[in-house]
Amino acid sequence: MYKIAIDAMGGDFGSSPVVEGTILALKKTKEKFGVILVGKRDEIEPFIPKKFRDRVEIVECDDVFDMSESATDVLKRKESTIFKAVDLVKQGLADGVVSAGHSGATMSLSTLRIGRIKGVSRPAIATLMPTATTGGRSLVLDVGANVDCKAEHLVEFAIMGGAYVKEVLKVENPRVGLLSNGEEDSKGNEVTKETFKLLQSYPQFIGNVEGSDIFKGDVDVITCDGFVGNILLKTSEGVASSISKIIKQNIKKSPTALTGALLMRRVFKVLKKQVDYAEYGGAPLLGVKKCTIICHGKSNKIAIKNAIYQALAYVKTDINKDIEENIEKYKS
Image (cartoon, rainbow, N blue to C red; front, side):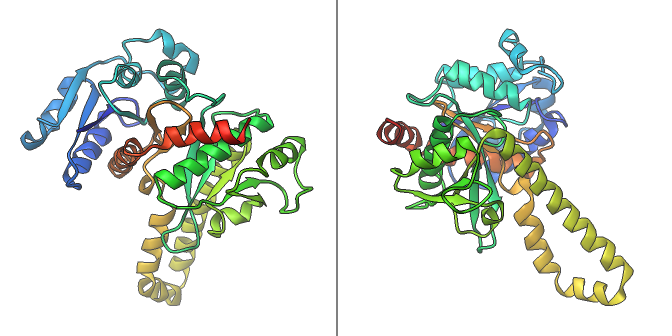
């Protein structure tokens, strides 16, 4: 039975959404798995239904690494919830870790305590984005782990992203693109131009893609450095939120628009679901030896539930073997 370690205290809202999301995950699937919740026992145990207590372990811990702290300081905090959760994976007591706490701390601990896959110089945070195709998703990486990158790092991201989409999302031949300011081979800065040359031997590489291509569904993996990727992610979240507000403001101004909105409410519901980060759960940290899912600090119970499902889907694959083999093959 697979086990997922969960930092129960790290998010913006404490243990409540984490515990609720964990119970929801246990309820909503027939798959048998266990969880290890790391946090304050008196805040967790009363909310675990009796029928799930044989599948939920609690590791007592009340030291929470704050969002305002420096990520490098987490290595000194061996009694913190995130340190203990990651260490459960390192010790082989859990197959993966999920945290809505300090993303930098989670990334640092996973990289240094669990370790990198052979051939990976820099792990990357990947995130799923909605596309115009029905049920479609594209994977963007890196979205914040590596601000300054060399061409060799972007090649690694492309290979890791391709492996994730193939193994976890079950896309047989994922299309991998390099984010640039134009589709032409000559476009981009010096790093992306060099990356383009290096990726030409990688069979999944389809060339340069532009920002607008991410949402069309014509590409499965979009590779970029963490500086560009993080701006892209935050901009996308802002646009989705603004569109929702604009629609609501205009509906209130017009009775005709209100009538139309009532007729279109199912469409609006689907749209809201597609752009909601909670539906994707969290962002996998690719390139480390064991599964690490980094969640939004404001994650609700739905996001935590989906992050746990994401971790389960990850640990059942041969993604790390795929990454190691392809990096050796196409980066040499």
